[in-house]
Amino acid sequence: MSLEMIFVLVVIIGMFVALLLELARPDMIVFSVLVIFLITGLLTPEEALKGFSNEGMLTVALLFIVAGAVQKHGIINQIMQKWLNKSKSFKGSMLRFFVPLPFFSAFLNNTPIVVTFTPILKNWCEERGIAPSKILIPLSYVTILGGTITLMGTSTNLVVHGLLISYGVEGFTLFQLAIVGIPITIIGFIYLFTVGYRILPDHLGFRKQVLADSREYIAEMIVHPDFAYLNQSVQKAGLRDLKGLYLIEIIRKQERISPVRSTTIIQSGDRLIFTGLISTIADLQNIKGLSLETGSDLELDDLKNGDVQLVEAVVSHQSSLLTKSIKQSQFRSKFDAGVIAVHRNNERIKSKIGEIVLRPGDTLLLLAGSDFIRKYQQSSDFYVVSSLDTPSKLHEDGRKGWFNIGLLIAMILLVTFGVLTMFKAMALAVFILIITKMITPEEAKKYIQFDVLLLIASAFGVGAAMKESGLAAFMAKGMLAFGEPLGIFVVLLLVYVLTNLFTELITNSAAAVLMLPIGLEIASSLDVSYMGFAVIIAIAASASFITPIGYQTNLIVYGPGGYTFKDYVKVGTPLSILVMIVSVMIVRLVWF
Image 1 (cartoon, rainbow, N blue to C red):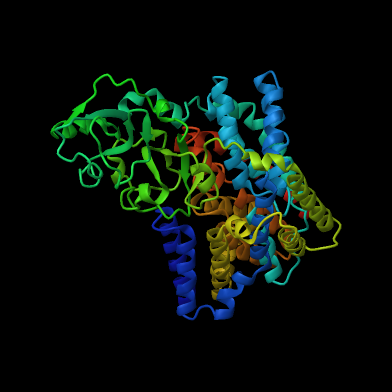
Image 2: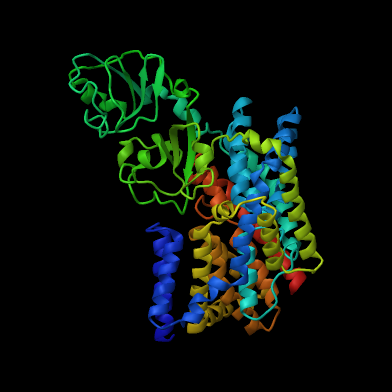
């Protein structure tokens, strides 16, 4: 092992540790590693920047725009909602809803699908007294499985495809992965609605838990004429920075003031509504001119008047709120919303809300203005998982929605019949969408997840460093030394397990980029087709079922379903094993 290889290995292990401990955003960690390789001269600027002009990466960017345009008018949501409501029985509804789902996720981005359908399914379950936890993990898993059917189903498939092209070999065709994707989707489906359904927990969603304990959350103080800070601002009165308490609303005769700003003036007779650690309410009672309203009949649901609503939002992997406390991130002034409670690992965090340091997957219960969902539905800080009624103006123009769907189908046909490559088809689709004013350039920019693109582009450079330093060949030799005497089946199994392990620990695209050079080295040493190894790596990198952190969609349903980490392990492990065995067997039969 040369010094160069040892250095690359140490840096990559450091990257793993940083990703595991969530020391920073994944894209920034991988980009930092790329910069280290560039500065130390391991990579030339051309090699380091190759990922930023890679066809696979740019196709992902264009796909974000096309998928965003298709979902903009809510046609698919309306169709699915009608389907759900038509069925009389629970099983009938589930079949109606879940059977078309893999088809949508095969051609659209998984993340918006899950963000869109989580509130629809959750409300549907709550109306019928069914635990949402029985439905939301299957929603995530079925969209992941559906994404393995086509080249455009997940960013991982496109990344592997782009890498193959950059290595000077042929990439995937549009439906090449379906050979494995369709069988694993069918088997996964059967498992999830038989054995999996029995293992799934029976949890109340987070919001229901909070509403059930709403007495713990709300305290009401009356302002008397002898209050020292009458007709002065909330800030001056010192009601802004209280220990573990948030002033979320002021009720003044018939008027409700929410969210409360630091400049809001306090008047005699105001009812101040606080939320948070109600055990610290005693501190407030010591203030002259404020009295605690005992037996307040207010509940969280009562705070939802016309202008205020309860919103659930899941903190995303790329959020600017990570590694800061809620107070440090100036949440209230930034989003014009107050955090009522934070849920992590199926428990409400019982500490002062302002001091909670947020992590990816945390679910926030917010008291927000009526336009909050519309404003932050596309935010990269969190996935808003409260119900979103499609704005009425979008209902009026269903034709635009159908035009966008028709355009996507036309592009898929052009790629299927080999008229255009995936990249050219998506570039043409985006051009048509902008020229026909179906979307504005601003909207197009909003749909692109730049953090995902930075992660993918940087990971290409990390993969190149493994190849150039000889580390990929060294690791391939080690795997072959163990697996080759036991046959090709065991070698494929090893590659699958290692890729899948990386996916669960870091992210799917990074796992694919790190494993593909090793897979190609193994294929070259064994003198067999590289395509079988590329397919195994693409499938294994997408098949993340065992942890909520391995795949974005798992993270989105984590809080709303009230799940614990253990629930993913219990339900996801058998599915992972099933998908692995079926994938390896099919690849062995078809390519070797």
